[in-house]
Length: 118
Image 1 (cartoon, rainbow, N blue to C red):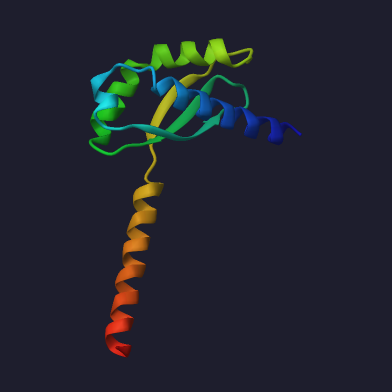
Image 2: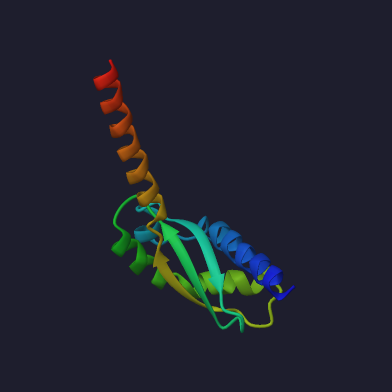
């Protein structure tokens, strides 16, 4: 049962942070088209690992997100009914790039097969 609740909290945190990003005015976040992919909140609710992806410079986006941490935590405190608002730790999510690389490799294999069977 506790695992189910943590899953719901993780989803709610990620969803609310994605909404809050729409209110961010930090150029380093806006210019790099940052999006929240998922969040993992610790069982004691003190910390949350927030995974993000971006189109642009991930290091610059990370600096911008760190500048906005206070505003984002405030948004979570107001919108979610948690006894503790977690500290946010932003981590670049490489899964989208990894998936794109796999898709590109599969496409190359497919086109080579068509050339040989052609």
